[in-house]
Length: 464
Ligand code: SF4
Image 1 (tube, helix red, strand yellow):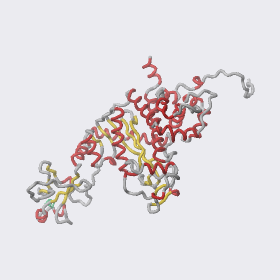
Image 2: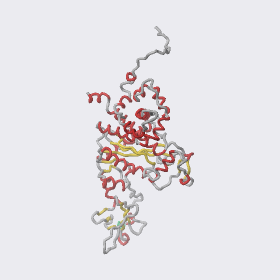
Image 3: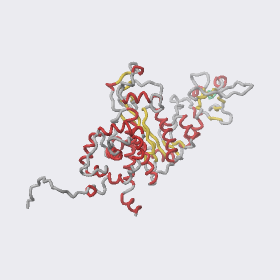
Image 4: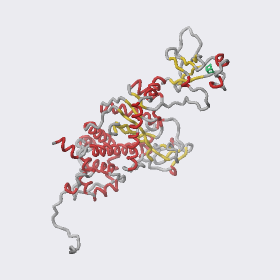
């Protein structure tokens, strides 16, 4: 029998419970168990006036932002529409069926004001990391670090070349917010002061972004998202936004490691990273100053392709500070004898030079395989060589082979960030906007991780 035609009839009274309409296995229901924003209001208390019109609840705004980043909704305008229409989003945001959804402009006003002044998004991120630690997802022993390029919200057409870019002519009073932030961060190691080398192009709308072709493809403007994770369950322990240059990314690793030590009292046994992090000064800092085992490939350019002896063919005598060549002769930094012994100095790159005697090389049968075009052989040694040797020794171990596999976990997080959360291109401009986006994205990734690894039943069991 055919049923009656379905027609919309407005009832006078509804009996409707939002709670009943959100599926038990919905992602937001799982995530909700780990969102604790109880002290957001206290954190922001000093930013609000005691008089005037009541504001939109800051906890509601954070919940809406979390919905956006967890579900890959990038536009705040669209987020407001989705929260208005989606029952599960309303439930997560603690909005009833008839409660109004804040206007999208509320987000930008709060972001540029209270949220940034009180560093609220950092606070929310750290709260979620603390929860991951409480739930036993972090041992803090094996950390991994990496950086990934995220395209900035700007393009080549709106930029100036190196010779055309005139920093002195920018008037901070007239400049847009992203340009003012660029001027304010010129002396910061993560941005302007990372390198004295001027980029080939500078964007007018977001000058702090870096013109880069690091992926060996067409160049574009980008920022670097730096993640430091605990490799047990790939929980993001810290996140940092920097310019996309090597120096800034290395500095970010040091900043994140120290901050994690201070905030969560985490002292790792090993640090895992790729070759980009295998520079002498960074290995020295890890080994000598922090006592951390570097599971990092060493940057070594001493290899030769012309078949002549490499530095590895020369044996270093630590006791006498000299090299012994394959012909059995000594290479020293200096052969002069001073009344007061002098310590040879390294050059500005930290490189020491050891030379063989010309008379030894002149009569040597191996000269054609050693230094065919030079009168005598010279071997260089970094002042960081002891720490580089520590890293080389670690690279021979089974643990290092395991670390190489664990390193992929950071790359997978970046892939997830771009493909699932849709953060292939930034929406906000300027260092502060980028920082906000990375903090929210990392918070969302950690929350999704908690939801996935701790099923609802297991938590109910713990509580019971
Ligand atoms: S050429 Fe000089 S440095 Fe090279 S093996 Fe012969 S003696 Fe040693």
